[in-house]
Image (tube, rainbow, N blue to C red):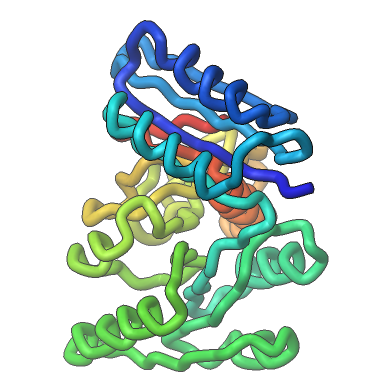
Length: 282
């Protein structure tokens, strides 16, 4: 028995649910999980269905053919894949490796359904960790003068590994617009702040200076606009005036790690769809 994931979005209209349900029913697909959302603001429809082939009357290729025809008719974008398929994930990190360690721990234990194809860094801090997990490590040193050449090496790695998702696990470099647009909606960053507040550098210092009572971390899709991409996941922790900047940083490490690993999991299970400047999570 094979399980499949069908995630789709399209302009909202009468009959969309019926059309998809009829397709599944006609194929005798056995639905095990389904969720959907109709956005009244954007007038867009989102759905994610998990089904298996225990009683299917047609082959997967035939079902995919019929799904393609339906998608064309309804102006629909969709993903249809075996649930066991895993996305190829390239991890980028600088000197702070707590988020990288969290992802690798979850991946190694089987809790994170991804295929880690490599780690790249502009520092050698994470090289030993990559060796422990037997993951290819790519040291890409960086200066302002070498940034275009360094980014070209990143692009080469993306092509070489057939990367489905680039994860910036505290990779403290701003990606060029060209690189951002190479993988639209397929680059996830962790920002150590509860966006949209305290963007840019040293957000914990900014938060401490403002005397905030809640700190957080935000996992979001990367766009050419710094820290402006659609938000996927956020984690928060209440604090008070006694918490120092150093203590905020340490608390933040846990928040960052949790937010990023959860965001990666949601993305790789095809549960997140960009909806304008926001996301829909099913």
